[in-house]
Length: 345
Image 1 (cartoon, rainbow, N blue to C red):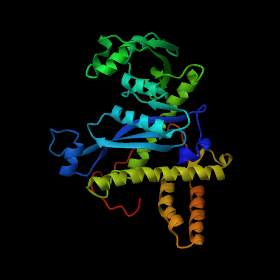
Image 2 (cartoon, rainbow, N blue to C red; image 1 turned 45 degrees about the horizontal axis):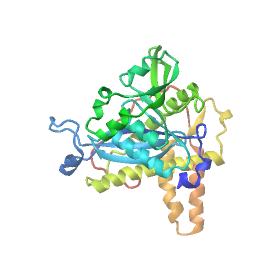
Image 3 (cartoon, rainbow, N blue to C red; image 1 turned 90 degrees about the vertical axis):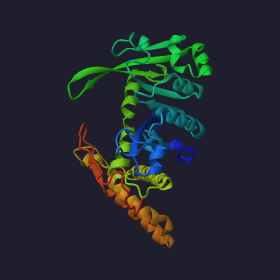
Image 4 (cartoon, helix red, strand yellow; image 1 turned 180 degrees about the vertical axis):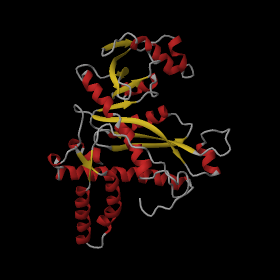
């Protein structure tokens, strides 16, 4: 509904909604049913935890989860990505740029994006398409007409239809080799990006910024797992597990939408502070849990309106500084993979 009714007010990158696709794993409650359906990390170990794989399609600038997929631990992230891409095509009226990390590259995925007329930026492993990437020097940007012979399409020999298409299609794509400074060692290395954005549509510096913004998807899993305790499920049954996952994602989106509205109505007076400030997400989640249900289920209009005002005032009050390059040790959940009782979401 947000992208249908309020897409014009959402922040875009050069006119594009900037999205990213990435996956993670979840530790599920141990039961024979979950083990049979989702699998374990290591079949050889007797007490190996039951695991599932989750994937999200994320709006990197507006900080909203657009789509979520959950499947067995052995599920392919590329299969999830293909589902996200089709979902994006169906629901989004505005043009998008979708970014992918290393490990997602496949010509089938590239072909799907091109067929859907969707723009993309793929971070490449140095082993992929090296016959093109090795022609570039550091900081160089070049378009190639990519073709494939029978030997180069052996990976797709089980899908003869796509293999035939691949051998008879020329893909005009852009390779960019971006130099990046590794902060811990002060050494330079190169990241290779593959994209169908032309130089006119996006400069090299623009691609560097897109690559930087892709990191925002990593923060989603940090919030869901560590702040919202996603892996502390309220039951063993699959329906309860799915309920917890999708309720957490829904609450995350609800929180980010309220923060977005508060930022629009009451801008943070940055000149008062030493560091750039932002809303405190952890506290905001707790505020939304407490006041949102009251704001829609209060007995009278006055009580509902009062809850909305209290919620907005509290969201405005709690700020945290943005300290660049600050690293904090991750705290592991003590109750991970065990059943807990959630009193609220």
